[in-house]
Length: 275
Image 1 (cartoon, rainbow, N blue to C red):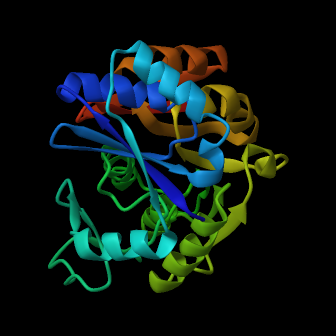
Image 2: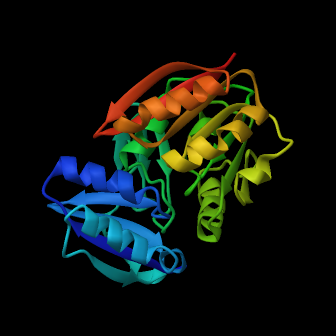
């Protein structure tokens, strides 16, 4: 799958956060803020149906000079390989590429640097991983919704989970997840599934990890709750700090008790329990 990189000039971190939140309503699946330029990535096929609306939104915000750059899959892979530095999470877990040295202590997670989202570099992946590392998941069955590289499913198994379904709509993510679970020796405990939230109908989970975006979380939360066992946990990220009220409000409507939140670089994770 080929991607397009949208480069948006921003005046600072606050404007970058606002533009990120606005673009998250479209099929952009990852973002980075680099020296006054917000970079947002979207599958080329997805851009066709929303480019005019995106351009209009940026114009309405008084932003000019945004540019689109097409990135072929193989070029993206080369970019990952040249920039993938190990990510250390709370001193208890390291996410690294296979060509980086293993950490001297803590959980060691190896992720092949491909296009799929979830290398630990983004604040939301960092937050979700940190939350998983606080929990003993021994013997539990879980779901990693919007799994990307499969990193969260892998960490969950390393924390004792008996089995995790890793669901993503991107065929490239599906393939990368399969590769990563094999590299990390958990292929017998993680099942990659190509599809959306409809793929989990009729299944049952003790915990659910959903690192996607605000709109999908709000829309699919009823499906998550339907498959979550009583007393089970739902961890959600892919949201900005400003999105917390809408997420927690929706969770309360679903009968979920909010048990905690954490913020990193303006991004948030929300933890809930099914009463």
